[in-house]
Length: 154
Image (cartoon, rainbow, N blue to C red; front, side, top):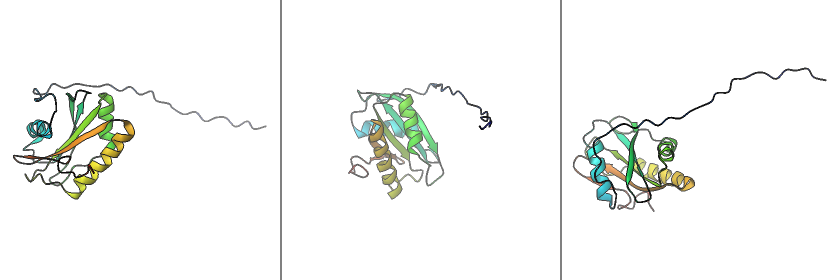
């Protein structure tokens, strides 16, 4: 008969708390077209000197309920992981998300990596039941919708 004692370990209880910060009024509140999302993201992250990757949470009427800066990178990229995008979306009970990021160079043309991350996030969203409606790239004075360009939305 073995008299080995079970080794004690510590179990941590975890509590999540959402903190809402007031930001300037978001307009348009309802996203009906890619231009609506582009205009909103241009105001939020246009003109930044480093790349900012943002997720917008939308309800079932496509009203923006929250915006979250997922990551801030350097001049040529920002690290993005599906876990960080969808952790926010799940916490906000989002029906859908629109993702976007800026190009500090001012040129909003999508890179190969932009298209790949769009495809990855769309696949993750399908598994979770949260649709990625669009990926908007913000340039100096204009934006590009990857959905409209059919890049990453094939």
